Image 1: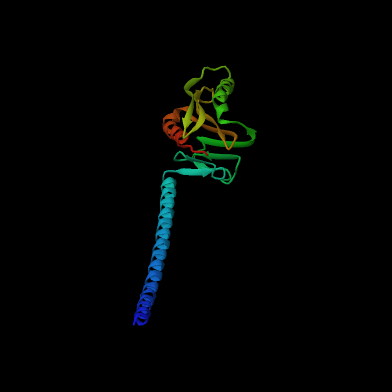
Image 2: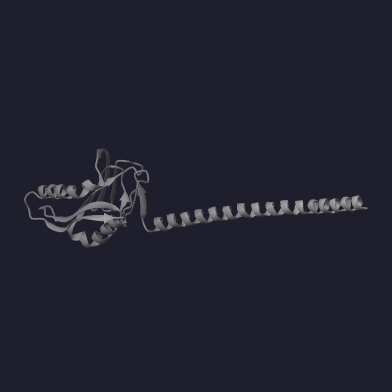
Amino acid sequence: MKKWMMVWLITIVASLSACSSPDSGEKGSMEATLTVEQDQQEQGHEVKENNKMENEAAEQGVIKVFSNLMSLKLPAGLEVQSNETSNTKLIYTDSDKKAKLEIWHDPEQRVTDADIDRGRLKMKGILEQEGEGEKLEWLKDETMLIHGKHIAVNEVIMPSKKGDTYRLVGWAELDGAFLEMKFSAPADEKDTWQKAVMEMIESIQMP
C-alpha cells in the first residue's frame, strides 16, 4: 500500500512539473520580447530627438564647419563663397559683397586655450598698425568664455579715406590649433550686422 502511494505522489509531482514548464518558458519569452520592443522604442525616440534638434538648428541658421569640429549661428544674409568642405578657410558674403566673414583654421599653428587672452593684445596691436596712425573707435576688447572655450574679441571702427569699416576679429583654439574669425562691413551698416555677428560669436561650440 505504501509503495503504491509513493508511486502515486511521484506521478502527480511529475505531472505538475510538466504542466508548469511551458508556462515558465512562455513567460520568459514574452518578457524578452517586451524588452526588445522597449529598446527599439527608446532608440527610435532618440533618433527622432536628434533629428528634431538638427532640424531646429538648421532653421536657426546653425552650421557645422571644419569636419563638424565647430558649430555656429551664421548671420542671416551671408552665403558661402568658398568650398564648404574646406578644413582650412571658409568665406561668406552678403549679396552685395559688402559684408564679408572669413573663418580660418590653421592646424599647423598650435595653440592652447590658455594662449588666447595673451593673443588678444597681439591682435589689438595688429589692428592699430592697420589703422595707419588713425584713431580707432574701439567697441569691444575682451576675452569671452563661450561654452567653456575662450574667444578673444576685438570689435572696432576702422577709419579710412575710402570709407570707415566696421570690423570684428575673433581668435580661439580649435582642436589644438589656431582659429581666426574676421568680419567686416561698411561702418554705416554696423547696426545691421553688429547684433547678428555677436550672436554668432556667442553661439560657437567646440569640443
